[in-house]
Image 1 (cartoon, rainbow, N blue to C red):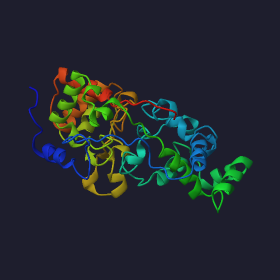
Image 2 (cartoon, one colour):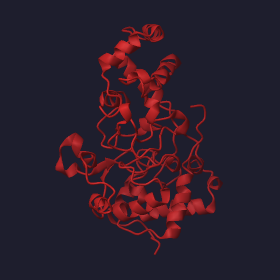
Image 3 (tube, rainbow, N blue to C red):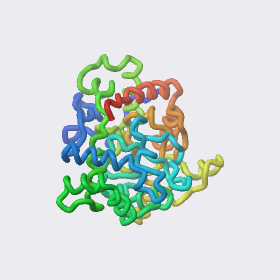
Length: 325
């Protein structure tokens, strides 16, 4: 049976999303992305950040850059279940896209970094990722006459950890993917979506998906428990797809609050059809399977196959041109 409206807590949450200017189209729980990012630095600092983002010298063996896990020509996602770090080590969670990341409430699935600048600390120092340290990185960058000159020209204190982080973060703030067909729809161009895509958007709201996936990212602005209706992790283990791990504890790893166990940042759905696999554990690379899993564990409902297909059609309208990134 198709839902007629959103029920209970989901209805309340969906209603609350129409706040503080969210929703250019009246009454919608989503709003279009702005046409550009939030970077305020000079073009020279942003280009410096671009170079650093793609520089493998940030890793201990000069093999891994930020772009290794977040390729700029592939919507900031390597489409791997787990990304590979130095010596082929696997990360603990699926690497989310870096595109549009500046609009998240925090970075990483468990929100352990409050800013893009702070985010850079973790891959550089993580044993499974770059396995380096800031003193090692600064030593290698200082050995480059090009970097030494560029930092000296752009910053009064030259090449420092803070300035490296600032440059990378400012570059990342330019990685916005506006002008999807859904953005055009939200701005008033109803014909930007087909009839079936508009039906998918209505179902997305009616089932309650927009209770968590709303705002300009359709996600990225709150945390929720993975498995509100059913034990996702026990079922995963029973299928032989992985026993519970520390990474599954989610936000609890940051706060230590038992109420935060298994809570994760709700991911953005921007470009979602192009950035599989899905969920913190990379459980599936199939978009329609991801919709069914969300229905079962987050909404407590089995979504009808024809509705899954229509919601999938809607989600593909969130794909945006890459432009000149």
